[in-house]
Image (cartoon, rainbow over all chains, first blue to last red; front, side, top):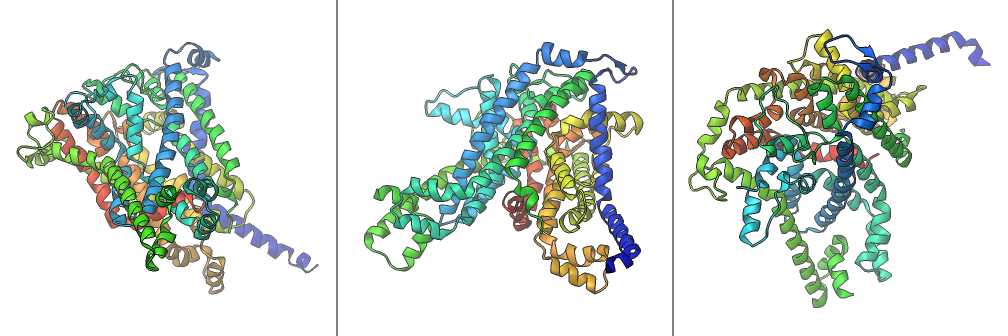
Length: 317
Length: 301
């Protein structure tokens, strides 16, 4: 009843709070609308247009969609490469990251040194790391093939061989495992010690302790690593592009147009194809169609993440 | 059976056992375990460290030797580093990288803190939706929306050929930073904020005087991440700065370095190390904040 008499005051307070909330959120509200909402709608619009970025856009219906999905020769390879990387790279990174995490938690002497050594490559800027790996693995004078050759191993041509180019990129991604190492390390140290001791009293061996004590308590983190890994790998762009360009040995001046994905389209990913269509061929419509395909896949994965990791949202206060 | 337990004994019980001066068998098992673990660790360390070593050794070789496949330099040409700095444009790339990373970080932190604070501590309708939208933006590949954005910056605002199309949007909040800061702010107990309000601080005053000082570790982590993101960014400068070498960043310029010095792996490797150096130096000064940040992304969710 008392609330009734205070109604105008309460309403004023509620309005003040709404304004305050809006004020605090305003940078993001503007940013989200201008730099996310608008371009997303415009992408849909351009996907139905013929537009070469010089003449005015003309409506062409589903022609861009049909072109990309049915005729464009590079769509298949790009999608295949991206999916290949998503499956192989993410799986190997999670396994390797967990292995390095387990290793680090068992090291007793020189922990600081090993942790830093394992972590540093993650910090190397992607372009620099890729340039370094293209050099290390180059078939002519690279130290890796040099050493492998001297002990009698016939080494592959790495970034210059269509079969080995993607595995070389995976190797590069394993070198930068530091982020996963830290996450897994923290998760492993969080497993209550008493549980290990109890398992030991029950006579559990190494495998059983991992399977029944470690694994159940780190599965949320493994899940998190898998899904963020998938999202990141769907955007995989810089390393593949730089490796392909450098390994091809083509001189790259500003404005020069080269076919991406050397060798033999084996490193062409969907994001690279978007760039190539939109900024080299000026086929805005097709590039926007491909963007939306990428968007749809990314959203499907995100939804999966939200469902599996409700914790991201539930930790309120 | 003994072998498997020896290889797997978790560190804690082993350490405790060591304190109690155990039986010789247990001590031998602990020693074997120590050797096994450290052998694997050294092998792994070689995988992570050797690339840096080879890159460094090549960076000081003479032009001819860098093409020979030798591993060890016969003479140490430190002048290669001077040659890199004297490459036309290299200093401009440094300056541009610092501007992009510096301003980008400043803008991102200032614009993301109030948003993260509202999402963490205010109760309002649509908060959950807002969080879902923030996380969705975070997951979105940048290539999805780049074409219309580029057309606006290039055709309407005539700002292509510069880094401004990358820096300006950072004054309007960054999804990843908002998300991380929110996770961090959730850990600040509500009572601190209530007591500040009793003292008569407005919400903004509370944010500046109470929340920001308490959230320093989280803010430091977000700032570092954003700085590294800008420093490492290749796609952004490629879209907006490619046509104007005067606006290139180190990350973007490095790749063209190889073609300018087509076969001089030594100079390219020296440049590569010079691009890696700032990030690694920053890391050594801010190690704690960094590890805190990485952990924040995964564990505190």
